[in-house]
Amino acid sequence: MARKGSPGKGRAKKNNEPVSTKQRLHTLIKRVRDKLREDAGMSTDADRIPQLTWMLFLKFLDDHERAQEEELGEQHVAIVEPPYRWRDWANPTDIPRRSQGR
Image 1 (cartoon, rainbow, N blue to C red):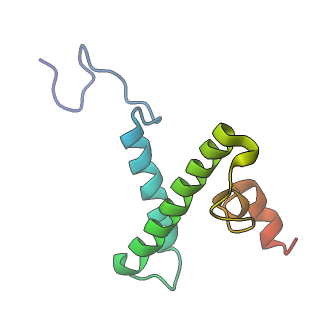
Image 2 (image 1 turned 180 degrees about the vertical axis):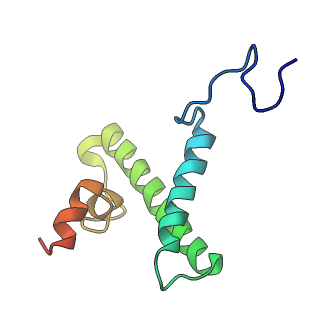
């Protein structure tokens, strides 16, 4: 019998990549919460949780909008217009340009 913490038979190596959607969501939420903790204006979870909830809602809404756009094409009427959509303001590749005022 293998001791706890030692590699034993039948134990899979831990991978840094989360396996399930639940694990990926947990990892994502933890990363966002850690980032929000860096904000001086948000000192408690009571401050951070509403912000996190709103961001998740906007992301899920944008995903729904994309699916509707693909399904309905030209007939789709957007719920949220640019530049207020998640895809318009939460683009990580755009962050350096925005922080430089471009």
